[in-house]
Length: 52
Image (cartoon, rainbow, N blue to C red; front, side):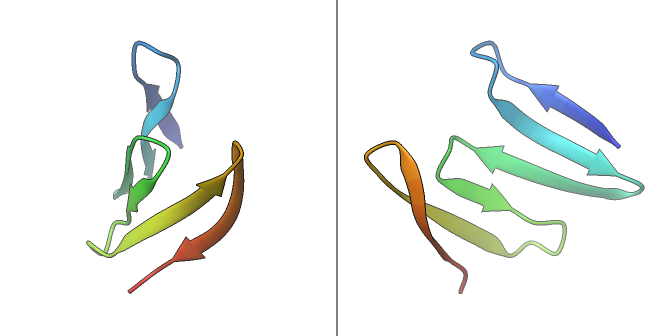
């Protein structure tokens, strides 16, 4: 497994085998399948997760 971080130290990319997960900020995650997950934050804590 390999991870890449942006200039602010936040993780932006994780590769495990041939699959790559991409993070666009703290709110949006793009899975290897192309599906997206929206992370819901309130007061700096994750309080929910939405996946279509």
